[in-house]
Length: 143
Image (tube, rainbow, N blue to C red; front, top):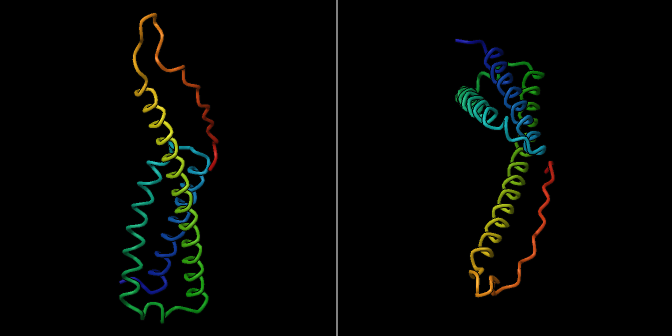
């Protein structure tokens, strides 16, 4: 069985690693860099599972925290707050990215619908509707 300090140190290490990966994912989302997201997501999932298991085990035995010095308990609490803040920023970045993607999909869908509603050619090679105007679309590289 591990000593209380070692158990909490393991959880602190997992928290810091998870916070780092979540922060990197958030930055990739803000910069619209999609290439690293799959690897970051896999790493984030593995760390989150390990972190959840460690915290569950720590909560199951309150004597572990009781055996620690105050500065270690405070470090654990601070690391928890930092992780929660980083996760909050990540959730906001994911929501912003989802909103952007939904907007692009909606615009493309509307554009496709307008093209599909247009009738075919009439005698003389003209269409019944005047040509539709092109809709400019601009993409910002950051969210």
